[in-house]
Structures are given as structure tokens and as C-alpha cells.
Image (cartoon, rainbow, N blue to C red; front, side, top):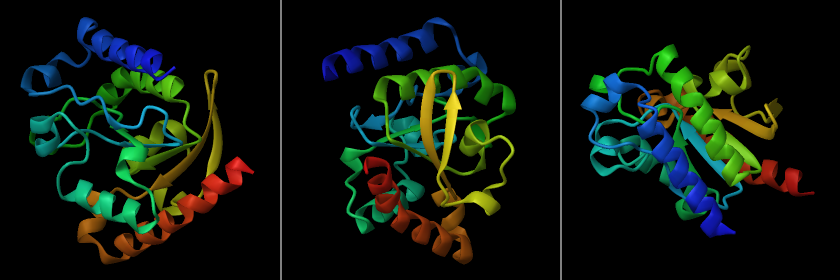
Length: 194
């Protein structure tokens, strides 16, 4: 079955290119950053958009925020290779600006297709941009670390919004909240499995 999943994920990438999604971003980007990790993962982690390092390497979360993410995964006994990491927007916005509503909307169907292929038990959103489509009425400061069941099209997902590691690098209170929220992830997954 993994071969079929890989083929389906490659098709999503090909469709983004064929459909000329976000041509302004594509023109400036070095790489289309689709995601990285285990395509049979129980956990899919979703950020907002690639940064400079990610654009250069073609992989998500490779800079300082990625290093912090790896440390948090390690701290709860989850190997990065066992999760799948992606972003809503797959091209780097110029100067690392926040992705626009239009850019997120254009990439949203492709993200849903990725989730449909991978079939994770938990979707961890990092930051308000990736949380917004899954929990449109929520404010991250109110719901971070809490799991919510959502249904989007035919997808039934458990979503856990967390603060973005990049923001937490510079704000001590946010960093502590993010570390605490991460510690609860294994328990959330156990509860889903039971």
C-alpha cells in the first residue's frame, strides 16, 4: 500500500505544478515544498509556509524553528521520521511574510488531498495560519493544546492546534506553553487508539 500512497502524493505535487497554483510565489521560489516524513504517520504536523532554509532544501522545518520542533518531538519520544510534516502553503512567500488568505485558499484543497492519502490519527497545526482552516472560529490563545474533532468533506480528523515554534523561540511564555502542549500529544494519541 505505501507505494500507492507515494504515487498519490506525487500526483498532488504534479497537479500543483500543472494547475499553476500561486504563480507569483512559484516564480520566486526555488522549491515546491510538499512535505517530509512517514506517509503512514499517525501524526501530521502542519505549519504555514516554507521559509528561506526550507525553500533552499525543499524540506519543511529545517531552520531554527525546525530544530526546536525536533527537540520537542524527541522530548516526548516521537522521532521526526515517524511523523509527516508539511505546510498549508507549499511555496515560500517573499521575505518570509505571512501567507495571504488567497494563497492559503489556493493550496487548501491540495493539503486536504495529502491528509486524505496519509489518513493520520492526529493533525497538529502550528500557528494560527494553519489552525484557521480547521478551526475557523477559534483563537489559538484559547484552544492551544486541546484536541477537537472536525469533519471536512469526507475527512474526519482530530486537530490539536499549537503555537508555532518560530514564535515560541522569542517568547518565553509561549515557549513554555508549547513544550507543555507537546507533552500531552502522546496521551491524545493513546486516547484515540483506545
